[in-house]
Length: 311
Image (cartoon, rainbow, N blue to C red; front, side, top):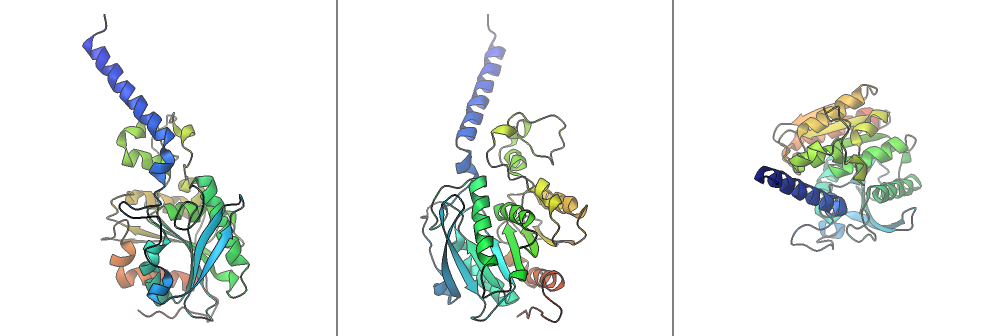
Protein backbone atom coordinates (compact mmCIF):
# COMPACT_ATOMS: atom_id res chain seq x y z
CA UNK A 1 0.00 0.00 0.00
CA UNK A 2 1.34 3.43 -0.96
CA UNK A 3 1.98 5.61 2.08
CA UNK A 4 0.96 9.24 2.43
CA UNK A 5 4.64 10.17 2.45
CA UNK A 6 5.20 8.39 -0.86
CA UNK A 7 2.21 10.12 -2.41
CA UNK A 8 3.54 13.48 -1.24
CA UNK A 9 6.96 12.77 -2.74
CA UNK A 10 5.40 11.65 -6.02
CA UNK A 11 3.14 14.70 -6.05
CA UNK A 12 5.93 17.17 -5.43
CA UNK A 13 8.09 15.39 -7.99
CA UNK A 14 5.30 15.51 -10.54
CA UNK A 15 4.77 19.22 -10.01
CA UNK A 16 8.50 19.85 -10.37
CA UNK A 17 8.66 17.81 -13.58
CA UNK A 18 5.61 19.59 -14.99
CA UNK A 19 7.06 22.97 -14.06
CA UNK A 20 10.38 22.17 -15.70
CA UNK A 21 8.58 20.93 -18.80
CA UNK A 22 6.82 24.27 -19.10
CA UNK A 23 10.11 26.10 -18.63
CA UNK A 24 11.69 24.06 -21.39
CA UNK A 25 8.77 24.64 -23.76
CA UNK A 26 8.43 28.38 -23.17
CA UNK A 27 11.98 29.36 -22.26
CA UNK A 28 12.33 32.00 -25.00
CA UNK A 29 9.39 33.88 -23.51
CA UNK A 30 11.19 33.84 -20.16
CA UNK A 31 14.60 34.86 -21.50
CA UNK A 32 13.49 37.53 -24.00
CA UNK A 33 10.97 40.27 -23.19
CA UNK A 34 10.55 42.54 -26.26
CA UNK A 35 7.47 44.25 -24.81
CA UNK A 36 7.31 45.86 -21.38
CA UNK A 37 4.15 45.12 -19.33
CA UNK A 38 1.31 47.42 -20.27
CA UNK A 39 3.08 48.77 -23.37
CA UNK A 40 3.13 47.95 -27.06
CA UNK A 41 6.02 46.73 -29.22
CA UNK A 42 6.18 50.07 -31.04
CA UNK A 43 8.62 52.87 -30.18
CA UNK A 44 7.20 55.40 -27.68
CA UNK A 45 9.64 58.05 -28.95
CA UNK A 46 12.22 58.40 -31.72
CA UNK A 47 15.57 60.27 -31.79
CA UNK A 48 14.06 63.31 -33.53
CA UNK A 49 11.88 63.85 -30.45
CA UNK A 50 15.14 64.46 -28.55
CA UNK A 51 16.55 66.53 -31.42
CA UNK A 52 19.28 64.00 -32.14
CA UNK A 53 21.05 63.68 -35.49
CA UNK A 54 20.12 60.21 -36.64
CA UNK A 55 19.60 57.84 -39.52
CA UNK A 56 17.12 54.98 -39.78
CA UNK A 57 19.15 51.92 -40.80
CA UNK A 58 17.58 48.73 -42.07
CA UNK A 59 19.75 45.63 -42.05
CA UNK A 60 19.29 42.05 -43.18
CA UNK A 61 20.71 39.36 -40.94
CA UNK A 62 22.55 36.43 -42.52
CA UNK A 63 19.43 34.27 -42.28
CA UNK A 64 17.28 36.88 -44.03
CA UNK A 65 15.60 38.55 -41.04
CA UNK A 66 14.96 42.30 -41.52
CA UNK A 67 16.29 44.43 -38.67
CA UNK A 68 15.76 48.05 -37.68
CA UNK A 69 18.44 50.28 -36.14
CA UNK A 70 19.22 53.89 -35.37
CA UNK A 71 22.62 55.41 -36.12
CA UNK A 72 22.92 58.52 -33.97
CA UNK A 73 25.75 61.01 -34.52
CA UNK A 74 27.19 63.48 -32.04
CA UNK A 75 27.56 66.00 -34.86
CA UNK A 76 27.14 65.83 -38.65
CA UNK A 77 30.89 65.41 -39.21
CA UNK A 78 31.70 63.24 -36.17
CA UNK A 79 33.82 60.25 -37.19
CA UNK A 80 34.10 58.59 -33.81
CA UNK A 81 34.53 56.88 -31.55
CA UNK A 82 31.38 54.95 -32.43
CA UNK A 83 29.66 52.85 -29.78
CA UNK A 84 27.71 49.80 -30.91
CA UNK A 85 25.16 49.55 -28.11
CA UNK A 86 23.43 46.28 -27.22
CA UNK A 87 20.49 46.85 -24.90
CA UNK A 88 19.11 45.09 -21.86
CA UNK A 89 16.45 42.43 -22.21
CA UNK A 90 13.12 44.16 -21.63
CA UNK A 91 11.64 46.75 -23.97
CA UNK A 92 13.22 48.22 -27.10
CA UNK A 93 15.85 50.74 -28.15
CA UNK A 94 13.49 53.69 -27.70
CA UNK A 95 13.48 53.06 -23.96
CA UNK A 96 17.27 53.70 -23.97
CA UNK A 97 17.22 56.98 -25.88
CA UNK A 98 17.49 59.26 -22.85
CA UNK A 99 20.58 57.37 -21.70
CA UNK A 100 22.07 57.60 -25.20
CA UNK A 101 21.39 61.34 -25.31
CA UNK A 102 23.40 61.77 -22.12
CA UNK A 103 26.10 59.44 -23.47
CA UNK A 104 26.53 61.67 -26.52
CA UNK A 105 26.75 64.77 -24.35
CA UNK A 106 29.43 63.31 -22.09
CA UNK A 107 31.52 61.29 -24.53
CA UNK A 108 31.03 63.15 -27.84
CA UNK A 109 30.68 59.80 -29.59
CA UNK A 110 28.38 58.28 -32.19
CA UNK A 111 26.00 55.50 -31.12
CA UNK A 112 24.53 52.67 -33.17
CA UNK A 113 21.42 51.13 -31.58
CA UNK A 114 20.27 47.73 -32.84
CA UNK A 115 16.79 46.30 -32.42
CA UNK A 116 17.25 42.58 -31.94
CA UNK A 117 14.94 40.35 -33.98
CA UNK A 118 11.47 40.43 -32.46
CA UNK A 119 12.20 43.74 -30.73
CA UNK A 120 10.93 47.15 -31.82
CA UNK A 121 10.41 47.34 -35.59
CA UNK A 122 12.59 44.32 -36.36
CA UNK A 123 11.08 41.15 -37.78
CA UNK A 124 11.48 37.61 -36.49
CA UNK A 125 11.61 35.95 -33.09
CA UNK A 126 14.50 36.19 -30.61
CA UNK A 127 16.95 33.36 -29.98
CA UNK A 128 20.63 33.18 -29.08
CA UNK A 129 21.63 32.05 -32.56
CA UNK A 130 19.47 34.70 -34.20
CA UNK A 131 20.54 37.61 -32.00
CA UNK A 132 24.18 36.66 -32.52
CA UNK A 133 23.61 36.95 -36.28
CA UNK A 134 21.85 40.29 -35.75
CA UNK A 135 24.80 41.65 -33.78
CA UNK A 136 27.18 40.55 -36.52
CA UNK A 137 25.05 42.29 -39.16
CA UNK A 138 25.20 45.53 -37.15
CA UNK A 139 28.97 45.34 -36.75
CA UNK A 140 29.47 44.50 -40.42
CA UNK A 141 27.40 47.54 -41.36
CA UNK A 142 29.44 49.86 -39.15
CA UNK A 143 32.71 48.40 -40.43
CA UNK A 144 31.70 49.26 -44.00
CA UNK A 145 30.65 52.85 -43.36
CA UNK A 146 32.82 55.59 -44.86
CA UNK A 147 31.67 58.41 -42.56
CA UNK A 148 33.25 57.05 -39.36
CA UNK A 149 36.66 55.90 -38.19
CA UNK A 150 36.19 52.13 -38.31
CA UNK A 151 39.23 51.61 -36.06
CA UNK A 152 37.29 53.22 -33.20
CA UNK A 153 34.26 50.93 -32.95
CA UNK A 154 33.52 50.10 -29.30
CA UNK A 155 30.96 47.47 -28.26
CA UNK A 156 28.90 48.40 -25.19
CA UNK A 157 26.54 45.80 -23.73
CA UNK A 158 24.30 46.05 -20.69
CA UNK A 159 22.80 42.95 -19.01
CA UNK A 160 21.70 40.61 -21.85
CA UNK A 161 23.43 43.04 -24.20
CA UNK A 162 26.70 42.28 -22.43
CA UNK A 163 26.39 38.63 -23.37
CA UNK A 164 25.63 39.63 -26.97
CA UNK A 165 28.51 42.11 -27.00
CA UNK A 166 31.01 39.62 -25.60
CA UNK A 167 30.28 37.13 -28.38
CA UNK A 168 30.54 39.65 -31.22
CA UNK A 169 33.73 41.11 -29.72
CA UNK A 170 35.38 37.68 -29.43
CA UNK A 171 34.39 36.81 -32.99
CA UNK A 172 35.71 40.07 -34.46
CA UNK A 173 39.11 41.01 -33.02
CA UNK A 174 39.89 42.96 -36.19
CA UNK A 175 36.70 45.05 -36.12
CA UNK A 176 36.08 45.81 -32.43
CA UNK A 177 38.55 48.10 -30.66
CA UNK A 178 37.25 47.56 -27.11
CA UNK A 179 34.38 46.16 -25.05
CA UNK A 180 32.33 47.69 -22.22
CA UNK A 181 30.16 45.44 -20.05
CA UNK A 182 27.62 46.65 -17.51
CA UNK A 183 25.70 44.46 -15.04
CA UNK A 184 26.07 41.32 -17.13
CA UNK A 185 25.52 37.71 -16.04
CA UNK A 186 27.98 34.83 -16.18
CA UNK A 187 25.41 32.74 -18.06
CA UNK A 188 21.69 32.19 -18.41
CA UNK A 189 22.35 28.76 -16.93
CA UNK A 190 23.50 30.42 -13.70
CA UNK A 191 20.69 32.98 -13.82
CA UNK A 192 18.09 30.20 -13.92
CA UNK A 193 19.01 29.30 -10.34
CA UNK A 194 18.97 32.96 -9.29
CA UNK A 195 15.49 33.68 -10.63
CA UNK A 196 14.01 30.26 -9.82
CA UNK A 197 16.08 28.77 -6.97
CA UNK A 198 14.81 25.19 -7.35
CA UNK A 199 16.36 25.11 -10.83
CA UNK A 200 19.90 25.43 -9.46
CA UNK A 201 19.83 21.69 -8.79
CA UNK A 202 19.15 20.96 -12.46
CA UNK A 203 20.69 23.85 -14.44
CA UNK A 204 24.03 25.58 -13.96
CA UNK A 205 26.96 27.05 -15.88
CA UNK A 206 30.71 26.67 -15.73
CA UNK A 207 30.86 29.16 -12.86
CA UNK A 208 28.76 26.85 -10.66
CA UNK A 209 30.52 25.47 -7.59
CA UNK A 210 28.88 22.11 -8.06
CA UNK A 211 31.05 19.37 -9.52
CA UNK A 212 28.09 17.28 -10.59
CA UNK A 213 26.69 17.69 -14.13
CA UNK A 214 23.44 19.63 -14.39
CA UNK A 215 21.01 17.30 -16.10
CA UNK A 216 18.89 19.97 -17.82
CA UNK A 217 21.67 22.13 -19.26
CA UNK A 218 21.32 20.46 -22.65
CA UNK A 219 17.72 21.62 -23.07
CA UNK A 220 18.53 25.33 -22.59
CA UNK A 221 18.44 26.89 -26.04
CA UNK A 222 19.87 30.28 -25.02
CA UNK A 223 22.63 29.53 -22.49
CA UNK A 224 24.62 32.73 -23.22
CA UNK A 225 27.79 31.45 -21.53
CA UNK A 226 29.49 34.83 -21.11
CA UNK A 227 31.90 33.37 -18.53
CA UNK A 228 33.34 31.08 -21.19
CA UNK A 229 33.44 33.72 -23.92
CA UNK A 230 35.07 36.44 -21.82
CA UNK A 231 38.27 34.48 -21.34
CA UNK A 232 38.90 34.45 -25.08
CA UNK A 233 38.63 38.21 -25.64
CA UNK A 234 41.91 40.01 -26.31
CA UNK A 235 40.62 43.57 -26.68
CA UNK A 236 40.52 45.97 -23.69
CA UNK A 237 37.47 45.46 -21.46
CA UNK A 238 35.79 47.87 -19.04
CA UNK A 239 33.52 46.28 -16.40
CA UNK A 240 30.88 48.59 -14.85
CA UNK A 241 29.13 47.00 -11.87
CA UNK A 242 26.22 48.29 -9.79
CA UNK A 243 26.61 46.82 -6.30
CA UNK A 244 22.87 47.12 -5.56
CA UNK A 245 21.87 45.15 -8.66
CA UNK A 246 18.60 43.48 -7.71
CA UNK A 247 18.40 41.21 -10.77
CA UNK A 248 21.92 39.92 -11.46
CA UNK A 249 24.11 39.28 -8.41
CA UNK A 250 27.14 41.61 -8.54
CA UNK A 251 29.28 38.51 -7.98
CA UNK A 252 28.61 37.64 -11.63
CA UNK A 253 30.49 40.74 -12.78
CA UNK A 254 33.32 39.95 -10.36
CA UNK A 255 33.62 36.44 -11.80
CA UNK A 256 33.61 37.76 -15.36
CA UNK A 257 36.38 40.22 -14.52
CA UNK A 258 38.45 37.55 -12.76
CA UNK A 259 38.13 35.19 -15.72
CA UNK A 260 39.04 37.88 -18.26
CA UNK A 261 41.98 39.25 -16.25
CA UNK A 262 43.67 35.85 -16.17
CA UNK A 263 44.66 36.25 -19.83
CA UNK A 264 43.96 39.91 -20.59
CA UNK A 265 45.98 42.63 -18.86
CA UNK A 266 43.82 45.41 -20.31
CA UNK A 267 40.82 44.85 -18.03
CA UNK A 268 39.42 47.55 -15.75
CA UNK A 269 36.76 47.01 -13.07
CA UNK A 270 34.75 49.93 -11.66
CA UNK A 271 31.91 49.48 -9.18
CA UNK A 272 29.19 51.87 -8.08
CA UNK A 273 27.90 51.36 -4.50
CA UNK A 274 24.37 52.64 -5.20
CA UNK A 275 23.94 51.28 -8.72
CA UNK A 276 20.96 49.01 -9.42
CA UNK A 277 20.41 46.88 -12.50
CA UNK A 278 18.85 49.56 -14.69
CA UNK A 279 20.14 52.81 -13.20
CA UNK A 280 23.89 52.39 -12.63
CA UNK A 281 24.58 54.81 -15.48
CA UNK A 282 22.30 57.37 -13.83
CA UNK A 283 23.22 57.13 -10.14
CA UNK A 284 26.90 56.76 -11.03
CA UNK A 285 26.85 60.36 -12.21
CA UNK A 286 30.14 62.01 -13.14
CA UNK A 287 32.17 59.07 -11.85
CA UNK A 288 30.42 56.74 -14.29
CA UNK A 289 31.06 58.87 -17.36
CA UNK A 290 34.60 59.70 -16.28
CA UNK A 291 35.35 55.97 -16.08
CA UNK A 292 34.07 55.41 -19.62
CA UNK A 293 35.81 58.53 -20.92
CA UNK A 294 39.17 57.52 -19.44
CA UNK A 295 38.83 54.00 -20.80
CA UNK A 296 38.19 55.31 -24.31
CA UNK A 297 41.06 57.76 -24.15
CA UNK A 298 43.55 55.17 -22.96
CA UNK A 299 42.47 52.24 -25.13
CA UNK A 300 40.72 53.44 -28.27
CA UNK A 301 41.60 56.94 -29.36
CA UNK A 302 44.79 57.80 -31.20
CA UNK A 303 47.46 59.96 -29.58
CA UNK A 304 46.36 63.57 -29.42
CA UNK A 305 42.76 62.69 -30.37
CA UNK A 306 40.97 62.96 -27.05
CA UNK A 307 37.35 62.89 -26.01
CA UNK A 308 36.19 66.32 -24.90
CA UNK A 309 33.82 65.74 -22.04
CA UNK A 310 31.08 68.10 -20.97
CA UNK A 311 31.46 67.01 -17.35
